[in-house]
Length: 396
Image (cartoon, rainbow, N blue to C red):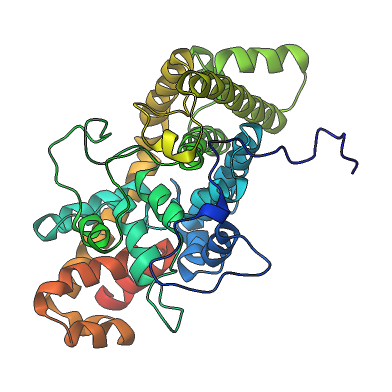
């Protein structure tokens, strides 16, 4: 490809995260001769056990409902594709954006949001459960693959993005408006490796966060249509989707339903990406950052969508909540998932010797006060099908 092609990689913007200027890793390691630090982070995530397990962790549907519905793995890959597209257009570091997209769901337990609710409930007396904090536990503690350290020993920039992709956790710009204290996992980790919780994360992390929003809305819409929970005609009252659907009908009046669904979803994703790029360019021009630290210390997110798109996004979420997440079919699966998690946790809590061998040895050799978090870590790492089979093993 010649140098004049528009497909050549653009030169990075001044506010892009420079891998050569990375703040490094908690445990020093020699640099790779063939990969940048962020490429190396991405590869460690791809080769991790936690990433492989995403294959059998659901978004909405339990694994045996069908082969074509999203799992956490396929969702993460789709988020990564959207993140790379936006990052490339904004001349950001694509590798860091991809790394954060691939890692963002590693802390999710089985059975989707129902599983997270169940774990948070049973862990209420023991510090609660938060999937973002659990992602940090996976990345820094629970993956035990390397001889010299626990976790994956990722760069400061990747860990910062994993923790703060939605915004600062402390200070005047904190995204969490409640009085809830920070999760103990975050507090413990930043006491040894300060991730600067009061600042925004890099633009690449912000891109990964908004790519996640674009992906899961559109792909849940796709899955709900294919599952027959609602039909294309029901979307005529959804402001964000209606004009795209109308355009598809006008261009392809005789198109069959599966193609109409795909054509609508892909066009809707493009509309949202275009909006994000347009708004983000404007915000970046207003903030005028000359470095990634200027992005971190800005008074707002530099990556975002327009107010009109935000309203449409919220209306789409409301539609999915009413017509998909609270659908009887999904509720039945969610209730079953909550029951499985709660019963397994209670049994492990009072009879840790019932855990599988590796975890049992750790539990029996530990301070009893640590057993709730140990049981939580084990359950959070389960796939849907393993949780169901473990419940069957324990309860018959």
